Structures are given as C-alpha cells and as structure tokens.
Amino acid sequence: MLLLVFLSAGYLFGQTVTKPAIDPSEYAARRVRVAKEIGPNGMLVLFSPKLQIRSGDQEWPFRQSNDLLYLTGIDEEETTLVMVPGDPEFAEVLFVRDRNPQQEVWTGRIPSHEEITKVSGIQRVESSRVARNFINTAITGWPWVTNFDALTERLPPRSLPHFYDAIVKGSAEIWTVDEARIPDPTAPATQEQLFVRDLRERHPSLLFREAQPMLVHMREVKSAAEIAVIQHAIDITEAAQKAAMKRVLTATSENQVDAVIDFTYKDLGTCCWAFPSIAASGKNTTTLHYMTNNGPVDRQGLFLTDLGAEYLGYSADVTRTYPASGKFSADQRAIHDAVFAAQEAAIAALKPGGHFRDADHAAIAVIGRELARLGLISNAEPRQIFMYFRHVPGHHIGLETHDVADRDRKIEPNMVFAVEPGIYVRKNDVLASPVYAKLSKEEQASIAKALDRYDGIGVRIEDNVVITETGARLLSSGSPRKSDDIERFMAR
Ligand SMILES: [Mn+2]
Image 1 (cartoon, rainbow, N blue to C red):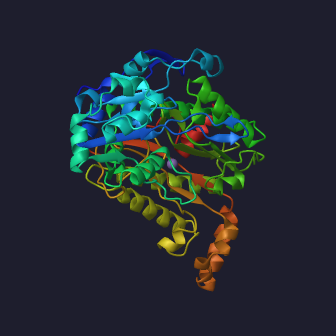
Image 2 (image 1 turned 180 degrees about the horizontal axis):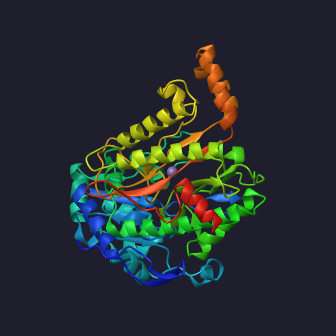
Image 3 (image 1 turned 90 degrees about the vertical axis):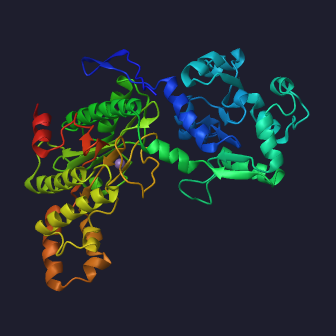
C-alpha cells in the first residue's frame, strides 16, 4: 500500500513548509488489517466518548478516542465504527451525526456523510441515531426494538447472513476495547464497557474479544505519514520552546512564559497542547509534574519547560531546562551536562531488535556515574540513584503522549520514542529518605555537603526519536539541547 502525505503549502518559521495529513487510503489499509485479524465471524465496535462536563452546563472540548481516530480519521462526536468483515455490504459502517441546521446555529457545521467518506475512506456512512439499532439487528437477526427507523426498515431480517449464521452457531465474536489501559475501579465506564456489560446480560452466549492488543500492536509502529504528522507537532513544540527561552529572560512570572507557549501553538496553527504545559522556575523544576505555572521567576535559577503540542491528534513531548538569566552557573551546568550525557547514552542504545530497557539501563548507568562524581551519592546503586531520578527515562509517543505500548516487544524501525532522563535535587527529601538514613556518617556528611551546593536544581532533557534500520534519528533537533547552544541561543 502506497502511503501518501498530503502536501499543502503553509507558512511556518518564515519559510514555506508542508502541512502533513493522513490519506484516506491509509485509514482503509488499517481497517483491512483489522478485518483480517478479526475474521469473518467477528464484529468490531468502537464508540466516540461522550462529552465530559467541566462545571455546571460547561463541557470540556471534545476529544476523539484514539482507536477510533486511528481507524477512521474522524474527529467528531457521536461516531460509531462497526466492522462486520464476513458480510461485505457491512464490512465497514460508520455512524455519525446528521447535518442539522437548528443545531448548527449553536455549535457549528456538522460534516455531511460525503465529507466523512472523503476523510475516512468509508463508503457506508449512516446516521448515529440508528447505530444501536443496527448492532442489535445484526446480533438478533431482526430489528430488536419496535420503533423501526430508516436503517432498520431498509434492513431486512438476517441481512447480515454470514454473521447471523455465526451467531446461530455460537461462533460470533464481538471485538471492542473493553479493558482499561490504566485500571481504576472508580473511573466511569467507557461507552465500550457499557456496551459489553449490556450485551453480556442480554446475550450470554456471545463471545467477546479484546481488540486492544491488536490495536496496540498496530499503533506502536508508525507510518511515514504519522511520522510526518508527529514531526509537525514537534516543530511547533520546539518553536514554543525557543519562544519560552527568550521570554524567560524578562519574565517575572511563570505565567508569562506559559502564555508565549500557548500563543505559539495557536499562532502556528494547532489549537492545543497534548498535555498541560509544565513551566517551572527555580525549585519548582524539581517537581516532576509541576503544573501550577504561576510562581515568580527565580532569576538565578533554572527554568524547565516540558511541552507537547498536539497536531491531528498526535503528540510531541519535548523538555528543555535553561537558566532564567541566560547563563548557567557552574553547578547548574554540571547537572545539565550530566543529564545530557545520560540522554545521549540512552538514544545511542536504541536500535531495532533491542529493547527500550536498554535505553533505561544506559541512562541510569550514566546518571549513577555522574551523581557519584558530583558527590550526591556515595555509590552508584539503584536505591541511591532513585533519590534523584525516579521516573522511567522514556516512552512511545503517538496519539497518546504516553502512547500505547507492549513493554515486552522488541524495538522495530518506525517506532517513535520520547527519551527523558533527569536529575532533581531536593535536599530535604534526600535527608529524610530511608536510603540516606542507612548510610554511614561519613557518607552522609559528604552527600549533605553536595546537597547544599546543588539543592533546588532540577534538570530534565527530553527529545523525540524515530527508530531507523540501524539506530535512532533525532526528530527534535530544532531547539538547542546542549548547555553551550542554549546560552548562545538565549544571548542572541
Ligand atoms: Mn515524556
């Protein structure tokens, strides 16, 4: 299958660039893979999520579910994808909202069914009003509810003969994403989970199959078009990084730096961040998921921005740490260079056939060596390193910032990773830690001395790479990474 990247002239950073998109033929090819996987007795069902209430009658902006976006490219509410590969007429059916002039006055234009076909490549587009009825009809062989509507009237009983035959024989399988990625018993049920619960009650003999492993396996390896889209998200993110590095020089509040980040995203043509920006000054750089972004700028301190623009649903994830004054102190530079060395080692360890753990180990080995050299630990052992570095050094990126992953799978070309080692010196936490308490008096004294020196310094350097045939290629080289390059850029 030939992958096409739509090219349209855009204007970014003062030069003409291409704005990538994903061709309908690519969505079609993904569905062909799914159809093959689920087989002629299967039915795949995916729903878009319901709008979430923020407060009162205000809703959060709609965000499509990633699996539905991955298989259709349709970023619309009230969308349901049903695939019944055994019955060619209904091999792919997409249910979407109908155009509705009264509603469009309030909430804007709803795309026509023809436009939905043009984006997704799905020929059979039906009204979202009949989605549940269609599914029930397919499973029971005749319209399940009595209020017949347009589609079920057009659907004679047993119009899905192959699937119905499988139902009768007890070999029909309903595929959907039922398992939560992050198990949380208190989380509200997804549309898919409610659907499965309901079907299990009404049709106890139906077989259910979890679609997640298949979709994870597909989503882990990116196409050329996906990599181009991610690169675009990264380019916008790096423009925001550079704007932040300039703004911090005169900013008095983290808010002001946060503001140029949001401005840059929107100015360069994407609505949103993929995750709330982290804009942290001084000691706040040592808080891993700092998101308050309203503290004063510590002029002598470091400034850390962990940013990811979202473009067509795909996420970038780039972190830079730089001096608010434009010039690193010797101690700040020492920590920054240590983290940079760890990151370079991690990136060098990524190659096809290897495992992401190789990058983890490479980063941790360098951080251990460097922390020992700086006197912050007495011995490069994991429990001491953990006092300063307590998150994993990387993850896949894609439709999720922390993209779906089978952590046991070997690395393959065209996987895209964020690599993000860090060192965070929080003196009081170290002094209070049980690991520190178990060290000898001499070890404690020498670490305490180093802690006085480096306290409040937090550095994370995060870059995005794509795996090639032989190693990893940096996608985020558009903003300065090394101490010298950062200073040079900020002085310009
Ligand atoms: Mn990250």
